[in-house]
Length: 492
Image (cartoon, one colour):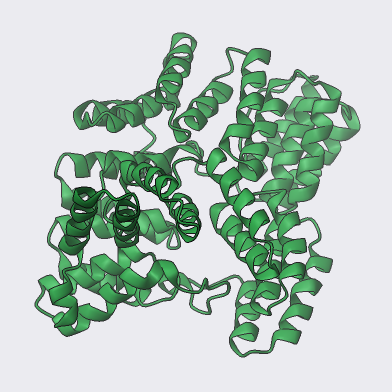
């Protein structure tokens, strides 16, 4: 099974806010009436009343229309409300008003990180840290991004700087706890995490770290309880589902794994890891006939056709109406109507990157790769996540532009070097050209990041060893693969 400390990589990129997209509550300067409106607006946002917050910000804009702090707040409000493209415009305007304003530089860093990857965002984080070297929000997010890039020594340096002037800032102890977990010191990690108070406050990333620390200490049932709460809050979070299933597996709770994840593991877009755990649980329960399809599917999942629009909601959670409608249309092969509905959504919500991504999905499912790419390119300006990137790669390949697909994949890995799915995809592409040395390097990196339980990784790594004429190495990886899914069992 994969290393627990390695899964800490999932904790950092979203920082500790528990919010989607960029978040901050930086201090803003201005006169008393202006600041009162800002406070009222932020309170409305905290209460989920975005229209009321917008009204307060409009009033504040009448008082100080060129206050960069105001425009950063407006950008964050727009982003949270789904007006992603105008949010980017507001953030850019804040920088026009004051190019050295740290909160604006921080938001630009966060936006670049989402759209262009971790590496390209560093220059913006560095600029924000130079503009305000004692801004705890800047340094905490900067440290988290360095951690996601695997630059742990640099991360530690920034965390120490943060601790020097803001020792009680919650993220100080949280980030220290992440580093301790990575160093496989769960006792220290648990102590630091408790000091942060973030897990007690229900911050998702802190809860996930708490579960990882429990797993490191062998407290499998405690970890499962925490992860059960997280899956209820984030039912479509693949990492959370996998870690929850792993905690149940390690605790010997096979029946719960099957009941909880059996249906999900049958879906076309389930992770191979989850499929394998369900299959192995059934095997351990003595239900070999039921186990075989899951194990076979886990072994073949990497090479299957990518599913763009799946009609099943994760764990029974209702889909947004627009998404559900389009999925029903695609599932019923009413593709022309689906395309019209998707483009109508763009007309209604032209500033939403999510809507462009959904429209791209619909056109890709319809076989129109060019139209899909046009819509995906707009969505990628806001957030180029791995699922979106994978679909853009698929669209390029369907369009016949393999070079563009590989360039995009390589750029993505440069920005998110710890993404094992991306590393495997590039390795598979390299294997088609019989570039076995590159395949070996890519897969050794993925295995070092915790993908050593992935049957596709082990199988392809053995093939690379054979291509390099390293017989002992090939035999070792084949043996590892057989231990996870014995051929004798599959054939029985």
